[in-house]
Image (cartoon, rainbow, N blue to C red; front, side):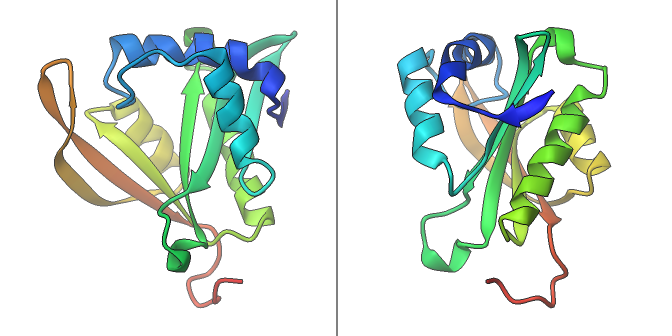
Amino acid sequence: MIRPASPEDATAFAALYNPFVLNTTVTYELDAVSADTMAQRIQAKQPEYAWLTLEDRHAILGYAYYGNFRERAAYHHVVESSIYLAPAACGRGLGRMLYEALIARAQEQGYREMIGVIALPNPISIRLHEALGFVPVGTLQRSGYKFGRYLDTGLWQKALTPPTQAPG
């Protein structure tokens, strides 16, 4: 089941997210995130932006969200997305299902473009984004530094509405 996230999900989200923070380069966050911090992040973004929870039999298997891409007003129609899945949810099509729901929500809210920011290398995330219609639009070289090495950041973009339609 996919549902809107709430601050009550924060403990499960932090438990799911922190192994990515502490053991991988898929996020550029360096320190573990507390449940309180995660709850604040959820509350700060809703209802303007979406956070969605993937749940099965009361177990949270993943979450996805979008927020502003950049602070300047001219970017108001563009959102940046993120998705995190528990290992048990991988390879079952659940990530695609969750991301499709996130894209639909962004379209419902009138956003025009979605940007996937991917720490490179990350072939699984790239495959998911491209399967959902995102196209690579650039690479920021040496833009992250984690675990003693520089990392590149890839940008993937998906049009949520026809490009001729002006932002609302």
